[in-house]
Structure formats: structure tokens, C-alpha cells
Length: 124
Image (cartoon, rainbow, N blue to C red; front, side, top):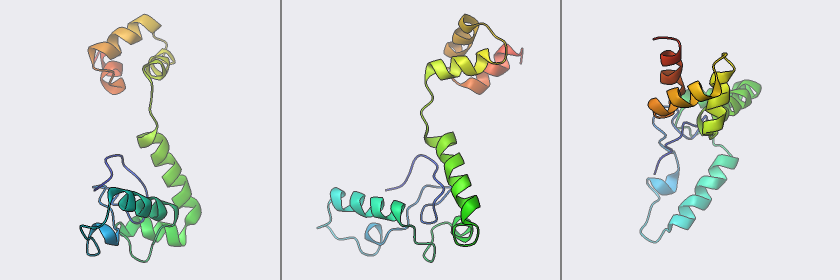
């Protein structure tokens, strides 16, 4: 079990999504259910264990600069976990001065990848 979406948490690798949770490693038994694992994971997300980290950099920030930790966690959530709709992507390109239909065409041509569509629109 690991996170596919990037997350800023002391007990989850910011690089791989690996989770530092005892029941997923040395405390695992066949009697544990997916429900038990998910409840344990939910508890870990709500109450980080910075003294037993998966990601030392995140744990250090959590312990010594909580304000920066919270800012970074919020930023990562906005950047990696927030679903951006097709209409949001069109509006994002329209803010650069492009027509809505041109934006829609460029995005659909590049499988709704904003970066590739932007490069196309800018002649790249």
C-alpha cells in the first residue's frame, strides 16, 4: 500500500508514497482486514509520528517549523490532490488572452495537458 498522489506528511515518503505504518510492515498478520488498515492509515494522517518518520525532511519541518510544514502541506494538497476540471483548464489558458474555443482545441489535441497546450498556443 502506498500513496499515488504526492503528500507532505512525516510518515509518508514525499518521493515514493511509501507509508511508515507498523501494520503494513512488521505488525502485519493475515487476520488484518483492509478496513483495519484504512482506519490505521486515517489515524496516522490525523496524528503524524515525526519521531518515527518515513521522510526525515518532512518530519524535521513538522517538529521545528510547524507553520512552514502546514503551508507546504496545503500547497502540495492544492497542487497534487485537487481535481482540476476541463473548464478550469480552459479558463487558465483564457487568462493568457486566448479564445475559449482555441483553448479547448489545444487542450483536446494534447489530452488536456495544460503545459503542452500552452506550448502549442505560444508557438512552441
